[in-house]
View 1: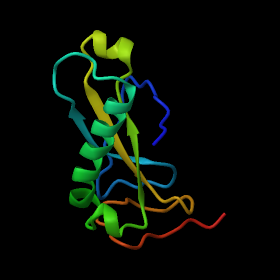
View 2 (view 1 turned 30 degrees about the horizontal axis):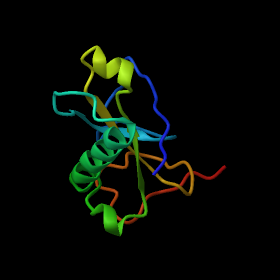
View 3 (view 1 turned 180 degrees about the horizontal axis):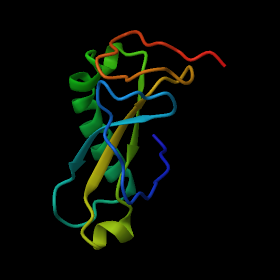
View 4 (view 1 turned 90 degrees about the vertical axis):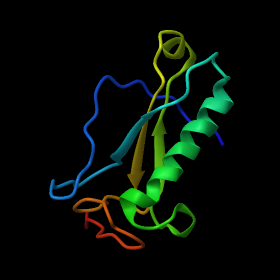
Length: 114
């Protein structure tokens, strides 16, 4: 699985009741374990696995049964060496923009018309 690292300074968590209308929606932030940098591939795998674990709590459906997908922001090696272990999980509809929150969206979501 190839992933592109992104650097972020701040991000807001999605929540029900706040209107969201485009792009990925952050649904979880967590820390990877302390220790030596495990390598790019391992960081991506650990980050993705942690987001998948948290996916069902937010969307109301397991990742294996989803129509939505997961994006990750994870620490790259220079940031890791500065103590950054933060992973940000996002959820999005690969079919395009949606209206409203993806919280408890389950197998369905409302797509925005262009």
